[in-house]
Image 1 (cartoon, rainbow, N blue to C red):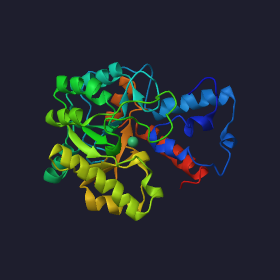
Image 2: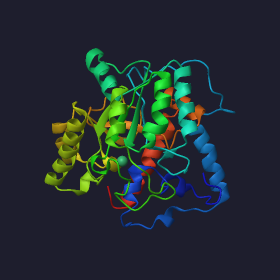
Image 3: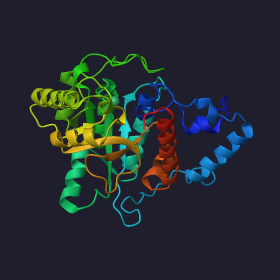
Length: 326
Ligand SMILES: [Zn+2]
């Protein structure tokens, strides 16, 4: 937790979170967030201890050389679907450093795991009734140009694939669908030639709407336009079907989900947990904002981070209620 703040509430409902809660932070709060601020270093220390327990860490974390067991959680097949956004050095909540990403991928390979696209994991589940035992799904939201420049060479090196979700109305442009995010700033997006190269390399290309608006706040007609236009534009450009979708900001509702289900086989939320038996149109994902170190990545893959993720989900839910978004 940030040493300068020393607040428990701030850690649980931090505004410095990735896209899922970033959307909520842009609306007026119904309860002042400072009500949750405690401001005592003792509390900070208590939280660090609690977090240590929740993360399943004991002593100095040591990265195991043994492959983790991925295939059971109380007998249920589970799958980690990882979410990356931009690979850059800004340190923003949507950013992972290219070198760190390379280390993540090298560690997955070291553990004998296969980075794969969402459609491949779903095809396995449809065929066998379980998620792939040694698979980890890699997803990239928004379609930053650095996905081509920094991610593709690393994925190729390990023989991994991934799914990239595009904001079709910003192809070849910038992430200017809203004011520049703190630290991230304005970033160039993939152009169609780069996307074609990603598809040729075996990556799946999915849709993330045309303009990256919060679907929950749109009319049904607007939602349909956002998702159909994005899907059709991408399919036409690439000459292949678009099967997967990611909800911008994780914003969804039963109505939005139903509309998406009519147009796509698969859809991803930003609910922070490993996928198990969720419907294919509400697949949860792990935002890599929370999983940057290799020991934490390994705890995620072995299920030892589940309590921590549950607390994070609770923090997000509290924050949405406070912001009037629930
Ligand atoms: Zn997005």
